[in-house]
Amino acid sequence: MVNELLGIQYNIAKVNRTDRKVQNLASYINKDILKAIHKVKNFLTLNRTSK
Image (cartoon, rainbow, N blue to C red; front, side, top):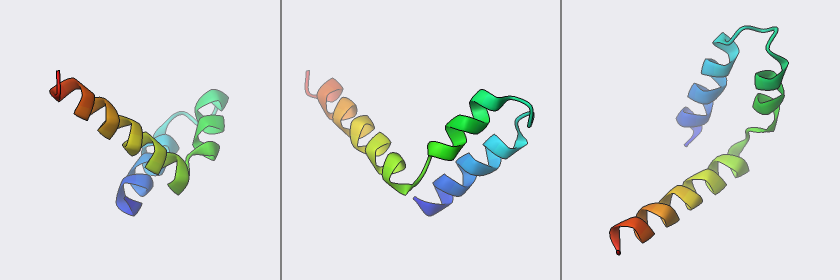
């Protein structure tokens, strides 16, 4: 998960630095947010395969 977070931060850093919306979004991404994203993805995946 740490590698994934670093990868996201790296990719955001490559974005044009003048794009404030992306930079603002990057400031909110942290370990807890990443865990929540995975939790939702897992929930959606389980529900999609159970139907």
